Length: 105
Image (cartoon, rainbow, N blue to C red; front, side, top):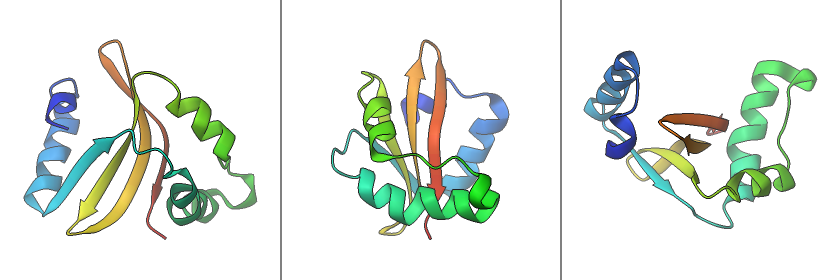
């Protein structure tokens, strides 16, 4: 996260700093095999709660395609030992793109 923080816009760096000050931490990893839990516990409930049946819900194949990119990773936010948010992100040149995200159900 520290490496990614250097490329974030100033307002986003401020948000990351606040997150850390309030006891949250973030971890990035390739973590194969985590897609099922992400879809069931984070992504699908978040999309459904915000957009109902009109929301775009990723599939396991969609996540496999995204995570096959060499600079793609899971970014997970923890409060204590509990993962409270997760996303698939990718460094593209000097930018960091969030592809899919979700909050703990």
